[in-house]
Amino acid sequence: MLDGAIRRRRKKMAQWLPTTKKELERLGWDYLDVIIFSGDAYVDHPSFGMAVIGRILEAEGLRVAIVPQPDWHGDYRDFKKLGRPRLFFGISPGAMDSMVNKYTANRRLRSEDAYSPDGRHDLRPEYPTIVYTQILKQLYPDVPVVLGGIEASLRRLTHYDYWKDSLQKCILCPSGADLLIYGMGEKPMTELAHLLMEQDCEIDVALFRNLMARFPQKQTVSLLHKHEIPGGIKKDDIVLHSHEECLRNKKAQAENFRHIEEESNKYAAQRIIQEVDGMYAVVNPPYQPLTQDELDRSFDLPYTRLPHPKYRGKTIPAYEMIKFSVNMHRGCFGGCAFCTISAHQGKFITSRSKESILKEVKEITQMPDFKGYLSDLGGPSANMYAMHGKNLDICHKCKRPSCINPKVCPNLNTDHAGLLDIYHAVDSLPGIKKSFIGSGVRYDLLLHDSGDERVNRTNMRYTEELIEKHVSGRLKVAPEHTSQRVLDLMRKPSFKLFYDFKRIFDDVNRRKHLNQQIIPYFISSHPGCTAEDMAELAVITKNLNFQLEQVQDFTPTPMTVSTEAWYTGYHPYTLEPVYSAKTQKDKLAQRQFFFWYKPSERNNIIRELRHINRPDLIDKLFGSSAGTQNRRFKK
Image (cartoon, rainbow, N blue to C red; front, side):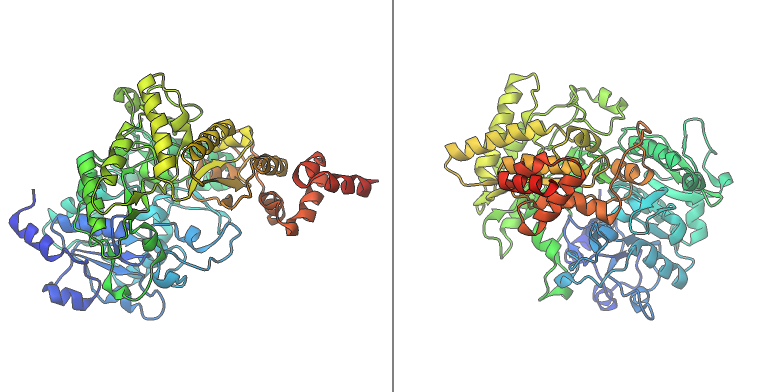
């Protein structure tokens, strides 16, 4: 429990965490325990990682400051302005991976950074984790630096970097940081803070590393000499192929990844060790998922839910997207091959209590510009709230990366009753006109035959209520592809389920006199996908009367099955060869099929269909006249 002094400090700090020397002076602080450098603008909201970690540490009685988007050019004054912290510097590079945030799949610079004021794209460097740490180590070589956030989490071991087109080492190597916290940071950061506060002195690098060796911290990565590994290399450790071996042998890299993914999704994981540069990256097992009380505590901290006043008059696009939304749970058991959520959050679902959710909704209704419409009641997936295994003992022994692929686990409780209860409670609150579901919906969960008639009826009622009451005109779902072979590689359900869901969607719209659209999301150039697969996708979606909008060329991001298959040419679980379109020409040949309805793409598509020996699809896409022209051309 917090003592009176800490409660008074929390009350005093209930506005924003300090970002400048003047703000420290107003608080009467003459020192700081932790200084967090953030790649994002400072928004004091539970959707922004630096705010969560700052508030968590504040609740433990620490003095915390945030330096958002420091200028990494020139004299480094932003890195000097608050001086040396008593315990450590923290690096929070951003809510998105910096390279995904900065570049498209074609490696073109994006026009906007959604996490910067007015969308400016020049306020963070590439790889801020590395850049910020190197500057801090130059200025304060004796102060520990702790990495966190998705950028570091996904680079905790040897990984393929699409933007450098090469295999890269554990990010502790190029950055020079002293510790990496992977995954969601509340538990590991709290335990680290407790350990350091017990020393009752200023922490330097030597003491910090000594403490990490004597008291290994869960859910952390350290770079150690062999003799420094706590307990030495043990029989139950998973020892990966070294970084150097992975450089020589792509199959070794693919083989490594299966272990990394499995341990990321186990309830009780093993320690992972990988040699690199004559040292060893030691990945300590993660904490078990947060309890509901612990997750509630994280969301119930005294956030202002607003951008820092320094941004007055400016717009932060990412904040505008989420300001009237509520995240109801953490984790995702979908296990999609191209997704990084399970590598960072894990597959086990932790859901907030109904009371915590309603408390946040009530706070939103008091915001001056709230008009009565919640933009999202969701999470990593919209409809996994409160779902878990019926027999948790089975879950605790499981290492499947997905609970619903290749089929729904018979031990999974797919009951949507808890979600309906939340929706009904939220919609009955004063000030709420409508609550929308903006997160992705897993229709395979909605359509699954659970074997329990009550659950099946509840899930059908949820489906109908979702479509009737919680769609803002357009419902986005993600079938991702139409080819069963490609879907199997993606770990996505059969496209037949999309037909079933669309039939229900259209039926509800007809019966309720609605005029809503279903917007499917698709990916081109995923490993295993060919131009012929994309041509057939174009014909199938045309027959469904879609002109596709929500489409993406596959972008390899660190620590996903799809990326490892794309880079190595082997599937990490089978080690069988997998084809991937890699050249710009081959990728564009696939992507163009999304836009068959554009006159500018027609001739190129017809040319490609002839090239892949599928002239039969010309008629299906463009009509018999195009097919006749094609036959005349061939004669």
